[in-house]
Length: 364
Image (cartoon, rainbow, N blue to C red; front, side, top):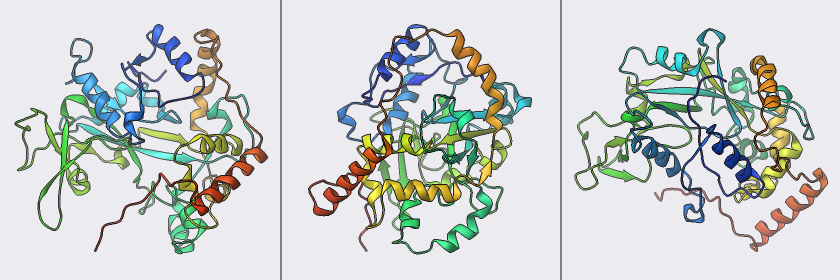
């Protein structure tokens, strides 16, 4: 609807009928299946799949011209919004990448809450959820939740001013749209204490891409013949080839529908291999997390996506693709999930369930 030419889809070991739906759309050439899915070999470390997407585009020059193809990475719960005057994502990218030294756009991401909804409703996401976090409350939020061991701090992971920091018109939580031919294939960082060049496992992740290095470390790995890039945060911030999110945000933003309704959020957490991250403090649970998001992630009305609703409904009504697939999630009652979370929390506390989400700290 907004002008993307191709969708590269990877199925992260879904247990519902997602595969059926993807196959149906791929058969109609609406999406393109990369010839692998996220398998057990990934062990939950999914970052290099984005490098795989870039490599796929680079390795098919007969279908994609890397010097003219731009790649964006985002999740299934994120929707791209472009302002009316741009007409298409292509027009927006071309305008923002002019002058030609811009090779990557940092697109700000706005995180939406539940809009006070407790249960799933069979309506469009962009119609059901129209309230999001308001970044102007960041100073108040930081001052209020300084206690690092509190539910508010641990439970607010990922939302507490991570994406709209001072000044109030800036954005910190971003996603990338980058020119494929300028994306690095092999990356490193420089140790700030020793100056040693340290190899990095991946170049792109779900948030930021890394461009080919043009500093004194530039070049190609002589053994792998892969273009190198510096993943250092300051290097990417100071490189003029990256368009800053304040500029990009005037034309393109990502609407992140993170929690949806309570029932939908509980279903997602219940099935996640990483659900232990919602039990990081003695009082922390998925329920405290969801309740906390309601105190600040529903504070700002934003219904800009609603303009796409009529056209999207018409498009969906016209399509019969995948009608034989079971697209409806098998949701349980909210009380069912609460009982399950009580059990998970008890197992984590007594050690019968191992934690998969472990934060590593550097030894001093």
